Amino acid sequence: MISDLHMYTNLTSSINNDINDIAQSSINNVDEQDDEDELMTPQELISRLERAWLNEKYSPVLLSHETELIMATFELLDDIEKRLKSNDTNKLTFRWLMHQTEYNRLYYILCSYIRIRCQKLEDYSSAYVHEQEKLSTEEYVYAQTYLNNVKAHLRKSVLNELKSEQTN
Image 1 (cartoon, one colour):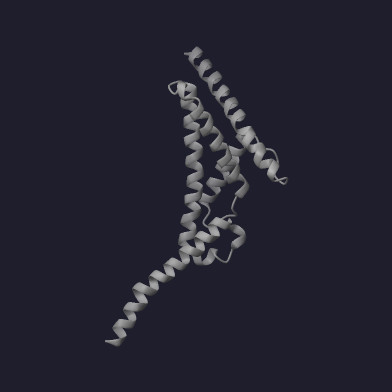
Image 2 (cartoon, rainbow, N blue to C red):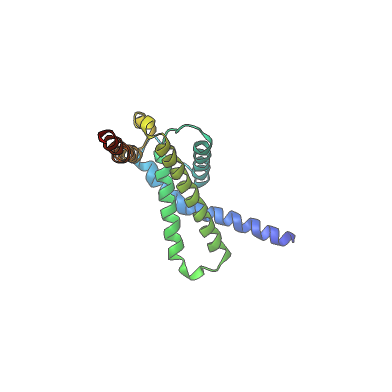
């Protein structure tokens, strides 16, 4: 039992080291592009992503967008995916499965973060369209398009019906 625990501890620390190696190059690339960012380890990146996700999830208002963090996480996911695909021969090893699980967990957190922000934008798009500093450019375009589509739908379905009833 103790030897199994020791083996598991060694394996998880080795997996964390592998993820560090995979991620460090992508994080360095993002950091080289933006001098304002400090160099982050993969654990710090994951920790910051989880904190941003939970803050956004439990905040009643839309928080400022974490563009650099999101881009660094996309880079990390791309690198992990490339590493997983290049290691096709060892798909049944425990190490490969742990890497795949970590990839899926990061992907879920990132998608959930984006989904939560989109839901808030849909619920309160008219308010957030005027707060561009909290939105990324993609979110601003999404909110503007969503608001225009809702307005057009309401004009077609409600106002046209009201006009036709008034003429009768």
